[in-house]
Image (cartoon, rainbow, N blue to C red):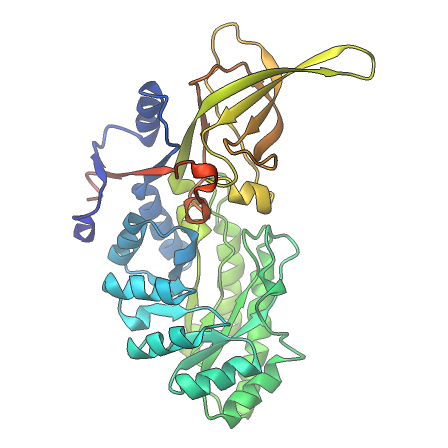
Length: 401
């Protein structure tokens, strides 16, 4: 882990837990910034679990999920590849010393400057899903190693990426492969993406089966594919194990792409690696007691709590992808429960974290903790209304170091 030497992190005594760290942060609060407590040991555990459960599938971490430098450098030390979706992400990984062959430019709609940059750095593996993209690549990076991205949407995802990227495997893919052959481009394999935060493991089996049909078709027009990219969408929350996904994927690749086929298999996990690695600690900045008149003429007391984080900070997924949010609070002696609304700090009326939840009464300065906040939280946060971004504090156990 010496790649982390220059990073800002705290080495944690083996006798302490991340829970101890969080309790200490709460005790010393309130803090002006919301705080992301980053447990790098959790990232390491996830990687080891992946390698144990899917030994034939090399992970290429999706940089856009959480680009904290300590996470990236930890994954470099662990030997993962990296899925980059922009010139900026490719630049960053090259600057960190990642070899070009350990990067896949998994963006089917690339800009010309990004193609030229990728070519200058020999980042050659990249995806496509349309004829015009092929023609652009043929003009600006003809020696690129191309991966055809299919659309294969799960019906149980928080966000369906097939609305934007991926070609139809029957109606479009064969024609695109023929067009690539006409342009004398080097197509090396197939990729698919079932959607973000998938809750359906068998969809991976079906997608691999469809990919095999296209591998067989590609042979008839002169291609010998060498790569299968099974994309991302894997769960990463503490209470959502990857085991059924691994079982379905292992079954599929052993059936359709056995080891003797010499097909390299990769994936693009993001959420899996980082969701449970971050715990968010927020504080109540303000409080309002409201009275709501009920149909029977009685009044209901509701608490409004205004936290120092919201949908413009760590709760993008809660607002836009219906990501479940569970507030963890400390119950004081004799505290009564009230219907409560948790608001973000901004002036936007849409900045609501949890519209209705029963909580023991809180006071200004009290903490509200949220687990599983490592995926797509800080990377999409902004300073709307001038509020501060979450502060990230990273920890790593001495024995891991």
